[in-house]
Length: 215
Length: 395
Image (cartoon, rainbow over all chains, first blue to last red; front, top):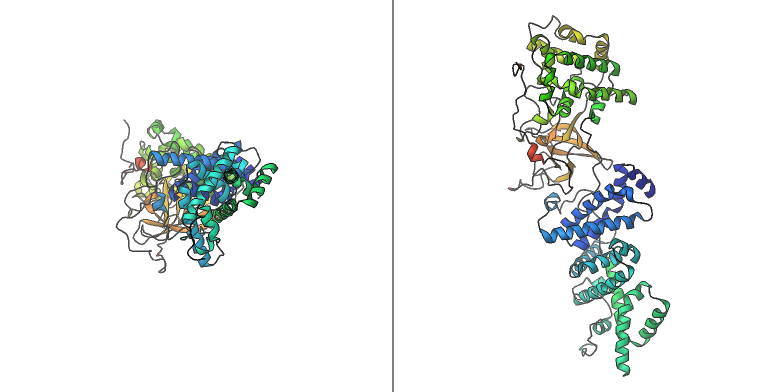
């Protein structure tokens, strides 16, 4: 069954068909929610809410990119979670539900990189995660959708209820701030991800005039 | 000054580097940026570090999915329609005979003066389901024409209200014998199943006949009649014809012969908790394998050695999942005597010693469920006394 067929079946009320869509997009949705919201529990809730909302509203999908349509629901769900979190910070029961050491079988990410590379990438992920959380919400969600998920400006504008110009300026500021954060951690980043040209780093940081002790 | 001009230009370019990286600048602006990059080492470095940043962001690892986010496939059955398992349990029956039997039974009941008692049972539909089921449960699976099965199930569903007096109609002693029997076999499911004691097996104290007993409905009733009304029972207690002449239609007898050749029916259960953990073994200290939602249907394949846990199977995402669930949170109207006692394999030991603080078997829903009473509110008292024949003859 291809995607349009799944959507058509789901629009007729076929939950199994809809679940195929869920399986196709749940990683993307959860990843987005996780990076935007900053924690797994809220991300789980947002992901579940988004798919329930998508199922309820799937009849309103009138073609085009399902991914972009879903994205708008996801950003709304994330925003709802954010507000709920700010209003009433509670420990989610999902923390009890899932044992991080024993995730449900088959849920782990398939990775073909070496254990070392995998570990380094996880470490990078941690730093990026920290850097993202330091950004204002609008910039953060724009940066995640653009550079982590790879959505187009137009899709991001639609999903975040704004225009392409705003998306561009948010993205520009978010990238600049993320760059500063990552450069500050440059000695702590895994070796594979360090910016190699030291001179350029220093210039970027406005340290052109610093005397290099070892050159 | 020239240097100031460069710095002004740096700022102008800096603002556009992000767009420049994405190739979304207008041709004019791009030309200006590229020209400036030739002369500004600072902006070249800035572009490089920005490119590096975007590159790192693109490599952001996806977090491990904590669980599947698929929606439960088994949707809630409408309150008044026959649940799917009933259709299943009806398979293989000589449908016409069954329908005739049900109608006959209903007709008999309706003629009872106390059929006004219908009003007493408000939860008519859930109450009726087990009673009908007991009458028909020990049938096994065999292909049946879908239309026929449907008509049978709708016939069963139609008996909802009429069949309810089975639970409460006790007045005329002579005929009541036959009528009361199913009551004891199966009090309403909603009342007896969710007993809060984990060790209490979820079945009525007056046990229903074992499901493996492949007798058809009329003969299921017959021994009960003989037991309760020995004086009324006719010579052949094992035959429905003896004690309840109305049921002794030739069709029913034929059905009897037919059904004996079928195998053990599967025992189904329904999740009573809002969300229920499926464990790797019979105990709360085993790892959680998955979550079931209220009204999900599972197949019971066994019970734990000290009772309290059911070994179950269910389909999730086209995969057969096997695990254990707390028996008190599973509703079933089937006889449980036939459930084999299962000891988990040795290698499936708990991940740790039972922790002092165990996660509850029920889980708060992240899914908002509309018009649902919370599970705790419908938890009944542990020992709901079934209506006995001597109770409440009205008037």
